[in-house]
Length: 40
Image (cartoon, rainbow, N blue to C red; front, top):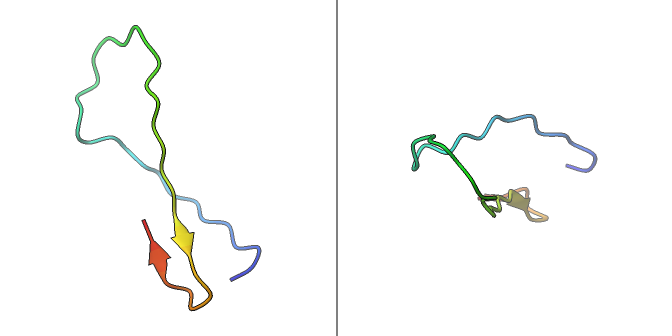
């Protein structure tokens, strides 16, 4: 699965969008192994 580009739209559904006066530090990752198993 080399050089494969995933185009997905991720949305935060846990927190309602309100006024934000600070930066929110977040991280998301999609990892896959040599057996092409995906881990989110």
